[in-house]
Image (tube, rainbow, N blue to C red; front, side, top):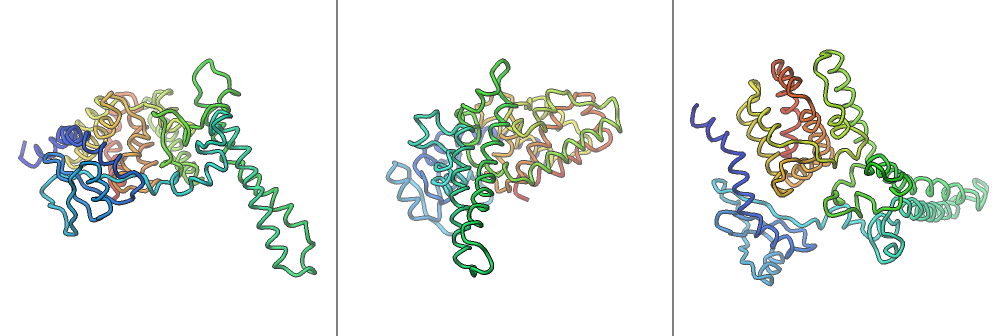
Length: 359
């Protein structure tokens, strides 16, 4: 084995080591930054902090953290961990609107169980109706009286706005019903805080609000069609039903832990068509996601998507990458081996892993 291959094979172990070194300081810096959108870079081996923002450095100094401000590029021969608060997430930018529509926690919806799908449906519908009514009234005042009758347009736009405003709440409610725990009632799923903005700590934060984008559903349909096509082309290559549901099923499966890290990494490392660079990138990605969950050994497609977003991937890239890797992990060992023999396994990795790194 040549030196370059040995270096690439050491990437997963090195990623774990650096993640463990960076974790304590990372948590302190993220807490000190608060809503500051500036980037801070951590050298995990020395604990050195670097930023271009004087304001961020001042905040860190107030928290007892020494941070150097510099505008020149970082040393490329040293490992650096980027740290950034979620100040520009969907939740923080549109927080007042989300709270008004009962999608995010607030003092108003706290007495009624928080941002439940039912509250979001009602609140979003009312907010959308109000915006539609206001827009219709403005349009009526701008258009001549001989073109449109006063009072009619505002009613139509209010109804349309109310219907559109209720759609996200209905979607969250149906997702909660499909992914509820066995033995629980479907109606009760509408009365629990939604998974996107008001779930438990292990639920996804607002950064994945882009999943509501209709384009993502097209990606899900593409993945399902790919699995169906695989089953027809190779009858023996059949994914396990539970894993298929978790990896590409009804939207909410994105958040279900379904990827056994060690088994999946072993499959990647023995793939004859995957280059050492691709193997190192994939295994490093899954190990980083695993460490972010406390090293439990099983992760969800969302965990991979979240790591990808942190490295610069777009929401659609991260969503698709997490789903594809989840689908590959859901295949039986026999199916994985058959795909590896044809090069399809490595081809799928090559198609999505670079995108998770923002490329």
